[in-house]
Image (tube, rainbow over all chains, first blue to last red; front, top):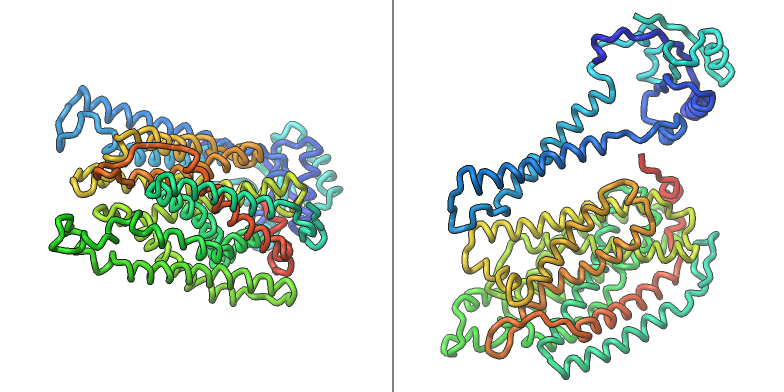
Length: 181
Length: 403
């Protein structure tokens, strides 16, 4: 979990606009950087494509959890009503599946929601209370009007001098090295 | 077909309209033979086909109203199609005439003797409902529904076409029209489903029936829209205007309303199954026996399980060939749904319910009314540009992307 992990330092560079950030993201992906990220005050259309990000596996996590919930609940209602404690209610057959549709549905939804919530936390490496990137004062602009690219020091291609000059060559300004924890 | 990509117009609409009209007239002719063969069966078939096609027109109207009310921009490129679907209402006004003549064959409550206390076939329950279920009020209501739909279908299209030449922004006009339109749409479709379909079995009642009908309306509209779009795509029409992103969005709606339809159908069944009261459950019982079981099963698996599992992934919603197959599939399932609601209510002469009997006379009115619907639709559709060219949000709509 993010709380216990020491995080590496970063090199960050500022860009003027969404356009130049998108362009920079493309260049970064092209140059083969892996542990880099783009920061902007709002989501930018086409950023996933520019950064060559793979589609999130969230759908499969949620789908699996939902299926587990559904089959589990069908098994539970079937077993309790046929073997565990069979009862005749309003003259209907022991296992009246219609009566259990709501609970089967609800548990599928509950487990899907758990999958979505905890899966999201895990994929985002949350909870994480601090990130070295906040060591940069200039980076505070990111919630207002700043567009940044950051490269982590544990990127296989990372080399302070090279990264700095590369970020400048693709239009980055105020290039800054932030120390790790 | 000759398409001009600069002005978005279909110059020479080809023979499609004529073929549709000829098919329509020929197959309506065949269904007249069906009338001579078995008039009660014919009227039920005709009503099925009528409601099947009017639900497509209403689906177009709903999508248009929703588009205006929600400030949607993605759907601007498909708006002209849905507007024209809604503007076909005059056809349905005329095509309602056979239902007027078949009123006594279709609706048991319209027989004078069931309302007459001195008659042996007097029905006390129906007599209690006389204030609502009587011929005069039925015709007043039907007239009102058709008038409302014709008005809104006509106005939505008229303003939109006017914009093509004037270039003004009619956003507020659309909204002023759509807000009351949506309320009236909800009320009229609900009561139309009560009057036209639920009163076929006048003892039975289900308060969710209107919502059930509505969920189907939206699905019908979407399937017709998708089939038409994919056909036009194969003819190189609206290339780069309606993109894969739009297809995905329509497919999302289709997927969502497959679930919504099942939810409504399930809720209706569930409560009646649970309470198991004789005055309600018989409606399902004669659909779950008397040779109708296979149709009921087809509806559960074909209208819910199969499309649900097929359309669940993103990749499926972006696969045009699969979408064509699924939209045709659901289009057919919409017919099965109405067939399942309407046809089993038919009575034999001894008062027992009719058995499942599918023959060519069941198909004939579908193609007949469909041909006339499509001829009228195509004529109006190709008369103007096929996208709202002067709409301020058109450009944004063309660049729309799913995230």
